[in-house]
Length: 63
Image 1 (cartoon, one colour):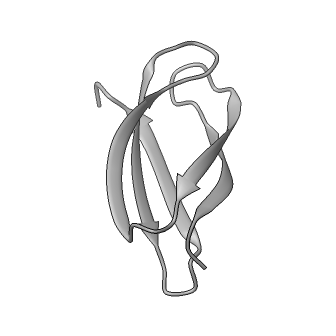
Image 2 (cartoon, rainbow, N blue to C red; image 1 turned 30 degrees about the vertical axis):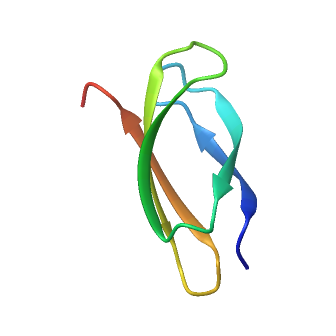
């Protein structure tokens, strides 16, 4: 299934759990999005499997 999927991640800076939308129409992607709480840049690495399930890894931009 392609399209947007909701996922929960934990900000690597402030530790808050955030709900984000993942675009599953792209199999592999990386991008930076600011935390909705502390506004610091979170680096996202997303892989979508054949069933359309995203695997989301987040890290600090300065790591």
